[in-house]
Amino acid sequence: MTDSVLIQPGASPINGTFRMTQTGGLITYDPDLLATPKAFIATMVHELSHYAILTQPARAEWETEPMLEELVTDLFVIASGFGIFKIESITNASAFQSPLAQGWSISHAGYISPELAAVALAFYLRLNDQDPDLAKPHLSGLNQKRLTRALHQLDRDAELLDAALPR
Image (tube, rainbow, N blue to C red):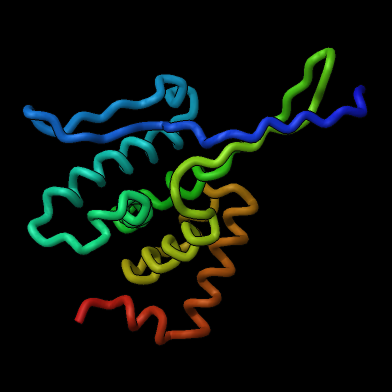
């Protein structure tokens, strides 16, 4: 056991990219993602969502703001029905141990927080009349709590859900 703390700050890894080419859309991804299927699926849906959004005839001003486009794309993943994959892939924590050190490694993927993902997932479930109890077994304990809080908030304030309905 050691009494040292090692902090290695750095940018979040880039799990995937999307770009348009002369022959169509091109997605690249980190091959290490194949070891974590939920993260791989969330990444593929995120990158495919770029294509779905970019091919719409009417796009908002956020199109010129790359960071805003990424936020919208992450929310689109949840609105497309892949919210469980998205929320479960946002934060990854794992323990490590070596002869010189031990501790935890925590990484963040994507552009939205797990709390925002839980709110978006709650909206998706309520707007599509889906039973949240069917989703919860597929969520970590912490994400179950986040989703439960978001659902309670929506249930307490019906105007929030009503404002999300198409007019």
